[in-house]
Length: 281
Image 1: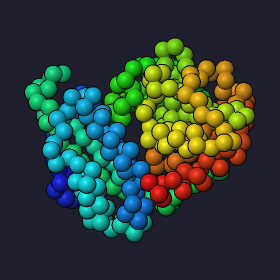
Image 2: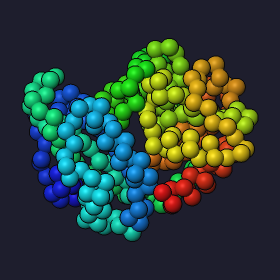
Image 3: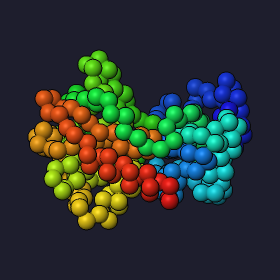
Image 4: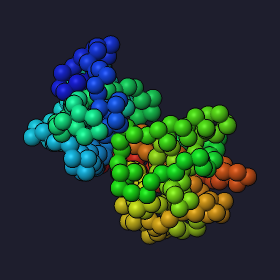
């Protein structure tokens, strides 16, 4: 079942057409949520990011688009798909209503909630090989729009094709200054000694939810310091660990880049603390 503007429809229903602005112009935002036994991980952070992103894109936020309203819609959609007592991946998509060309006729929105099953109830580290490469064909813009989780992700799609064609599990993306910005599907963190570094938003990385939560978490620890600083490609092979973060997987340790192999001891420590934080959030 799919939730379209609050109406629960069969997944096979036709409720979109060629006028859709998300399809025509990438004029859409989305949040990907992990839900376990009906609890949405870091829901407040997701909600406020969505609201801020809608304002930046000048979308009209409906009066009833409250945290409680959307949470209720998510909960009902999960229940209709018999996923209340297990793990669920939820995608909340918001797009501007049809009309106009590049300039829209209005700023009103539609929304869609879709769900699917998650096999793992909490964040885990699979322990399999996870090798990455730098993707150098195209670059991420170092601006505020790159911080948003929009449907305009063609660069990430092409990088994904490159990774598949060359036997990599992921690619690291660069901005125009040749700084490492993020991975295809999440933010990047670099561990060297007691320092943990992640690119600042001004470099063009996604304003990720797990990025935000980990920055807060690491900042509260005495064993490590967190740095929001630009990362040069030359630093990657000097690092003790590299890991990727996103809302579905939590922390994904990178095991290899070029001839460098990494351990993931710090990643495991942080993952346990992240799971504890998710239960309390």
